[in-house]
Image (cartoon, rainbow, N blue to C red; front, side, top):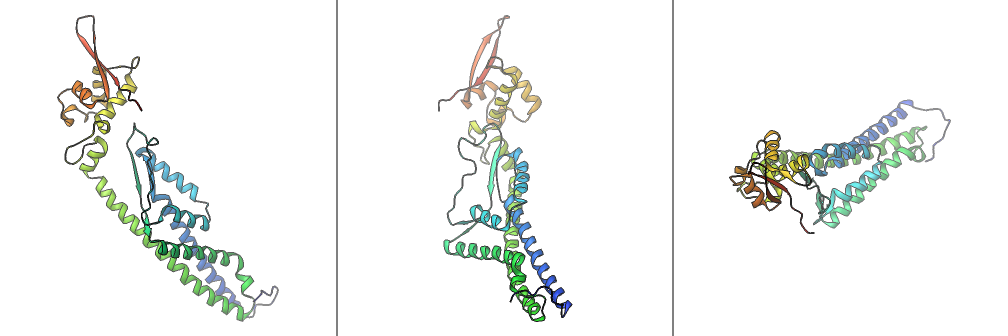
Length: 289
């Protein structure tokens, strides 16, 4: 029924009721958009640990002005995904090798039919939102009693539909938050930190290239190199000051030269001094691609 502009409001309270119901719908949609932006900003991060917070803030900023349609599109690209979906967040060649990096992703996997139904339902929500914002008074004559009654009935039904979507999204966000909490408990455990920081697994095994002691030796070469080589005694003093927990004994070695030798990550040579003694120098070994 087309709007009849300029008519006297026969029952102003009916029109106010329509306005209240419309406002309730739009507020719920805004709540949905806000929660969806938060979910998309936090569900997937990867890279050096010291950059993750900045990444999260950058993603939050990028999503801040996105429309509901764009947000729903993004949701089905990385969050609501087909069964068996795989995504390499730290591909070889792009991950930092000189810093601790990690990746995590929270997703919902669905069978193709279920995912298609869910996607169609959310695309209908986007259309519903657009209809309410742009076309309500084209459909209902809110300057007449009959139009107000019809509009109110329509808005009550639309609110119920919007609310169902909001409750579904809330459940998704709650499940993600609970998973994040459990993951945080694991990542704060001493055994996990030992593996993350030092590369030592709970059973005591490790791979030399990923150990903490090799990492700090590389850092020492960056700080103390002289013509591409680093004096071992200076490196030991620097590590003792900056990373006192990194000692050969942690990795089953008795001496620093043993670490350099067994790790196979460094070249080691002894240079004679004027007093007849020899000084150990090392450099990171160059590996052929």
